[in-house]
Every structure is written in structure tokens, then in C-alpha cells.
Image 1 (tube, rainbow, N blue to C red):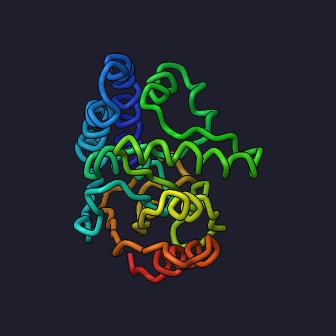
Image 2 (cartoon, rainbow, N blue to C red):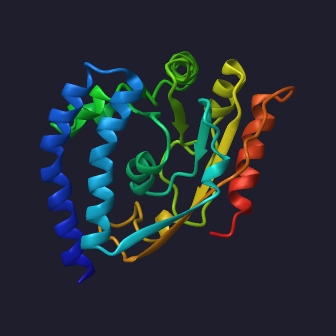
Image 3 (cartoon, helix red, strand yellow):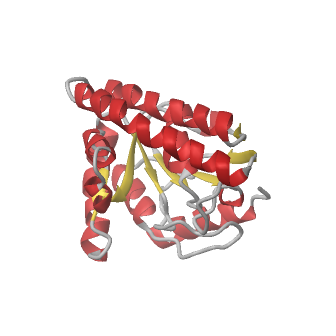
Length: 231
């Protein structure tokens, strides 16, 4: 049943990319904040479809820790889940992603229309510069910036290497960092196509202030908080 229900989910998700592309194209004529809210409608559908087909739900803890003013959100990266569903409960977002995703037919074009921060991960130094430069602009637009410090999906209960892009951006923009831990990889792993039913726990920490701290200190603080959570 897990295999059948997962296939059903993927079929619905794939078909939904067509109206997503249309909505994303129309959204280009609106402000960045309004655009993000319009495109988040697709994420709401996919999250609902995930619950209906697979039986995968989620609970959010500590969302009140996210300030109204734009900030950097440093989210643990285990699954596809957090790249989609975070849009349904967070303020208007600009997230950091690899530019290769733009090459995916229909979905990639719609993704481009959201105006994310797209980086070339093969050029590590310039990628960090792009995160900071573009991130400052996105924050100035009134959008929160979502970054996955681990850079790539890391299996549930594993640490991975935390990169300093989130810390560098927060220091440059002088905004706090909100760390996020979850256990999505327990149900929707990067090691398997099949999605298990259950309830994902997603926990938001209190904002980490950047004053007087180096990017290394902040990155370590993010990692320590995330890995201390029992999710």
C-alpha cells in the first residue's frame, strides 16, 4: 500500500505542476510578497494531497518564534517535504536552491518565477557570495530567507556538514537567525521513493542574535541547537 499510495501522490503532484506554472507566470506581475503567497497555493495543494494519498501529516511547534520582520531561517534538510510544506505556514519566502532545478520542465520554469536565490554549488566561494548578495536584496523586499545549512539532504538522525551561508547573510543584513529542526526524513527519505504515513514534527527555536559573533560561531550555534532537539 505504501508503494501504491506513493505513486498516486507523485502522479497528482506532477499533474499539479501545470497550473503551478500558470499561477507562477501570472504572479510575476505582483509584488514579491504577494507573489510568494500566490505560489504558496501550490504548496498547500501538495501538502493536502500528501495527507490524503499517503497519510503524512505534520505538527508545528514554536512557530511564534519567527519574527514578523524578515529574518534568516536555518532549516534542517532531510527530505523534499521541507522544500514544499514550509511555504504553507511561514511568511513570504525566498529560499536558497541549486540552479539546476530550473532545468526541470514546467516545474523548473515555475520555480524560476518565484525568484529564489539560485546558486552554482560547484563554485563554492562564489556560491556563498551569491547567497549573501541576493539574500540581502530578498530581505529588503520583505521576504524571509530560508536556507538549508547542510546544503544537501541528510538522512534522518545524521549530522552532515553545516555551511556558513546562513550565518554570513544574517551578519551582513543584521537580522536574527531562526533554527528549525524536524524529522521529515523518517517518513520521506532521500534514500527511497516511497513515502511512509505518520506525523512529522517541525520545531522552531528562538531567534539567534548575530551581534558580536563570527559566522563560525553562529553556524556552530545553529548546528548545536538543531542536533539537540528530540524529534
